[in-house]
Image (cartoon, rainbow, N blue to C red):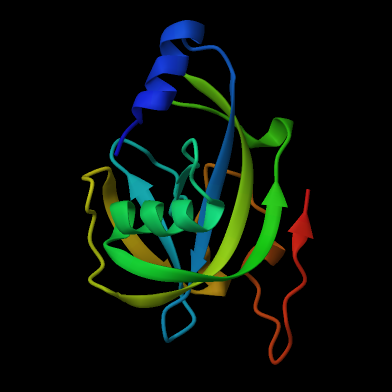
Length: 158
């Protein structure tokens, strides 16, 4: 879903000006340990399955919804991997709209589904190994994607 009625309403008031957007993103691994990244149509850079939290929606529900809309996968969040925000999480869309994300990143497990773009936004969906991660539009720290064998990964806060 490109933009919700809520965010469309905000945009009609502020135009392309900066919006602070609470959002969620998912680190999803396949059985081989590859991490799922998506590339939206017309974009060169990759991203995690992600999106805005809607009014009244919990972050847990938002991550499930966003992942399904973008990838066709049903997931369950396992833990919070990190929380990121600030100036370096500012992004300008191709239409000039500016946002600054405060992102809660969840490590998620696949429950079921077939990998495909449900909302038509994603041009490519692909699992990458930790050693071959693509360049991303949002500058997540590399340690977000590292597995700590046999122990819980500490959450990263920026």
